[in-house]
Image (cartoon, rainbow, N blue to C red; front, side, top):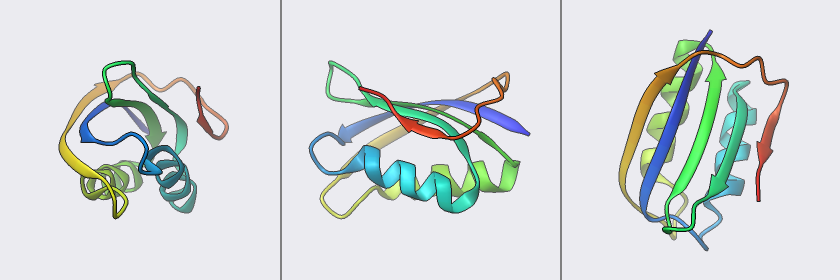
Length: 89
């Protein structure tokens, strides 16, 4: 089990980025949360198997079709034991 705190920049709000993140995470069995930040970026916390988390991060670097991801910053953190994946407001 690994956990990562993510900060995603670029055109990532108003393009279904959070919903895409939830769907991609659930498809891989990854838990955690995602939310929009006031500065126009997106923040996420993800946890799961190393392979699943790495796959999710790779997918987030692409983003949904209308997004233009500039960068995905990833910091390894301690797992929190999340039970599902949430979209935070």
